[in-house]
Amino acid sequence: MYREGSAKRGGEAVVGLEMRAECEKCEAPLDHMGEAFICSYECTFCGPCAHEMDDRCPNCGGELLRRPKRKPKK
Image 1 (tube, rainbow, N blue to C red):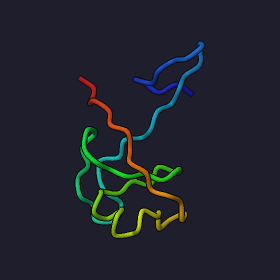
Image 2 (image 1 turned 30 degrees about the horizontal axis):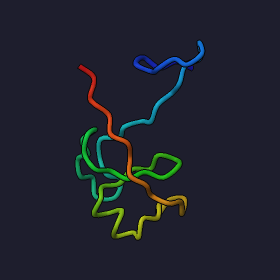
Image 3 (image 1 turned 60 degrees about the vertical axis):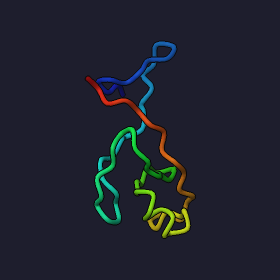
Image 4 (image 1 turned 120 degrees about the vertical axis):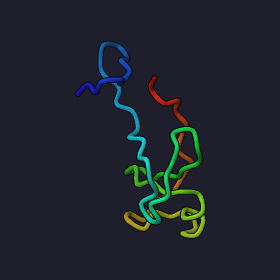
């Protein structure tokens, strides 16, 4: 599957992270260049909520790690 804006590597599409715009717990806005934390299923949380949950995803129990930053599309 190729999404518009996805990179291609070796002729195949590489699908990137879905950069969700708000925290799943408190609904705080999350900027693409700001701090956010995700699990391996891309559940997304703001820093304060992630730390409040001891960096564990409440949905899957997985570790929450800092989400990579991405410049917004122009």
